[in-house]
Length: 298
Image 1 (tube, rainbow, N blue to C red):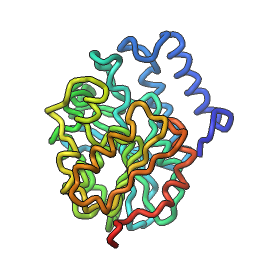
Image 2 (image 1 turned 45 degrees about the horizontal axis):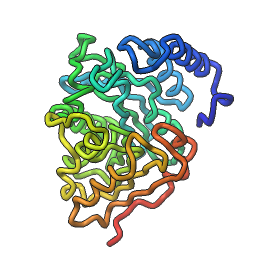
Image 3 (image 1 turned 90 degrees about the vertical axis):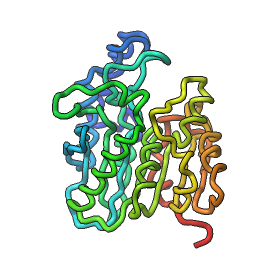
């Protein structure tokens, strides 16, 4: 597990130094579309992090996307734990999308790296247009990291991808872990499946309308909102971890999602003091994974 800068292997530290230098040179991370870590540096960082945890890079076609994955070498585990990345570098301002949504720091990959549970097959999934292109052409419509990031066709693609992974890897059941916007997609995927045994979200945007209203930005009518299907999702054991200092996705977003359920006996919201968005979760993740996840009536 990566616990801090002083503990980073040299190759990762070098990449992170390049990221910081790029940010410093630009003056501000989110001011200009080309500003921030270069795309090659972002790719290098993901590859280095995955290598430290023996996760192998794979590219899967999930029409119309090519989805980048980092996966355990097959060991015969019957449970797949799928980590879904956040929105990445989606915007450079409230009104200007980035040129590429590949994350500067792939936080869900860091969580997967910190997962040392036995008899679990870890697979990390990037989001559409992160690391990989569109239909093999290398480009990707920017709507898929802005207005359509949770569109029906995105959900369809990932549901089909999980079918493929389940068959290839011999899973009998699947657990989902979604970070930030990846939590939105995790819930929308779960609603379409009957093999999800646990859902964990970290700093998850589980009610996109409430989140947009909180930040006073436009709603995303082209995207699906998990909160609109809360009763469908109420049967899944789920824990939503929220940082006590998170100002990007505060606890009221998870509460809004849960309050729309007629039966919330399978839902837990756990606020962790002192943690913020993308800060402090990796170190605590092994302990958080050990928290029981079940429905109260069970």
